[in-house]
Structures are given as structure tokens and as C-alpha cells.
Image 1 (cartoon, rainbow, N blue to C red):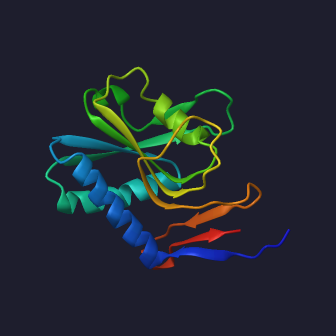
Image 2 (image 1 turned 45 degrees about the vertical axis):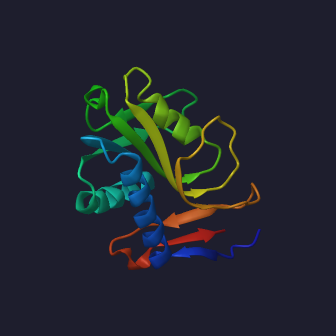
Length: 169
């Protein structure tokens, strides 16, 4: 297999996608007092933090970041959060990940909140690959790619953001 990398999004394009998603979240939740951005480790949490930074400057509501650490190798839901998910009761939760491939990670992310009465749940991904095996969909996506299942999408998010990139490998 070739190790060639094809640049899909550069740092400026990634920032534009995240900015656009932040404004979509604002439009969808303008009348809320608080929303919870639930970032799935490792890179979903980085996208969620960037969304939080933008929303804090443009939105009238409070934005809280929740970190979800999912054991992706487990065949059952095994996840930890950095604060009690019951604090999300009657609030809007936006689950954030970097890439949607099969949908398993997002399904597990939603599963974290199954015993909590939420106002609504939305999902964000930077890249939607359209290879879903689970019944999940994205509410906000930076880009949708039709890829071959053998291809890999590599999201590089760094500080400073100038080195950010999305590659198809």
C-alpha cells in the first residue's frame, strides 16, 4: 500500500470549518442558557475546545466543556467523563469528534448520556467519511468525504494551529 498523503484540509480551511460549525451551533441554540460541548478524546476534545473558544466570543449562552474518554477497543460501553453527566440534565449536549467513520465512537458518546434527561443532543465531526455501520448521523460536519474503506483520514491538530491538517492516506 502506498504511503502517499493527500492534503484534504489545510489549517486555514480547518479554522473556517470550525468557525462555521460554531455559528451553526449558535443559530441552533440561541435561546439556551448553557450548552455542553462533549469532546471525545483525543482529537474530538481538541475540536470541542476550539468550538468553545469561539462560542465564548459570539454566543450569549454559557459553554461548558465535558471530556469523554471512551475505551474504543471494548465491545461494550466503557467510558469516563471529567465531571458527572447528571450535571447535564435538561441541557443541550453537543457531542464532538474529529472523524465519523463507522459511527461506533459517536454511538458510545451518546450512550454516556442515556440515563440523563437531556433537552437535546447534537453531534459534530470535522470529517464525515460516510461509512456508517451504526445508526448515527451528524448534525454539523466540516466536510463529507466519499472514501474507500481501506483509506485512512488523518487529522492533525496542534498548537499552534498553523500546523493543522487533514490528510487522506
